[in-house]
Length: 161
Length: 113
Image (cartoon, rainbow over the protein chains, first blue to last red):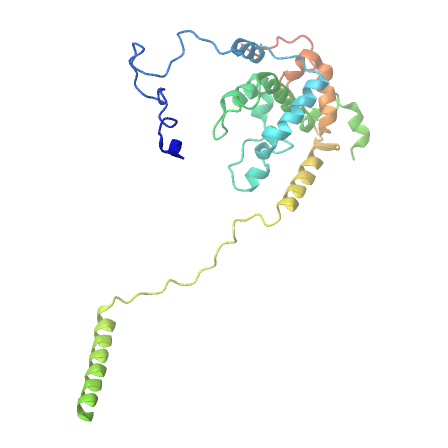
């Protein structure tokens, strides 16, 4: 029991967070990143963000999955901007089925996912770049499903009253 | 002795009456606010039912065919079918929807700088 009175385990020989130090010339114990440092994987992420991937059924399926997880609480499963969060009082996001967003380039959706827009915060930490393009492609599918022409979906003619 | 007790009781009664008069006069008259209807509690009393209604309504919007604009030939199609159509378009799948894509050989904007 005598050992419990000893403070040696509490007072370690180390620098506290944000403590000053005289070891380095800048006087701080925290070590800033060297000039020009790049995080591991940054270049690959930038490359994936810059180049849209090929749109395949697998990519659209991934986009649908990610959209239902991350986007549908506010934007709604059909993209009209009336998800459950909105029904609980959150301001509604714009519908994807507006003229403006149908005409927007797909990179706009990727940019909004990356940086946020209005009250929407950035999803860059949650959705990696390849999945952002997948979500953008699925948003295109949502838009097409609400604004298709008979030429694009000829089978619709027989099913419409 | 009895006179002393009676006198004390009289004094106490007079003092209490005087104090009540004094307080009634001095205290500000407070008007009670009129009763008003309380709003409904901001609670979700049936979360599972709310979610089911949302999924039903939005699932309906994602399936089936319907006219959007009969004159221009715009229809609503199931999103699974829209995904098929987009996957068949190849590189043009990410282009804006509703643009005159039928015209062959238009100069496409670069999608990403």
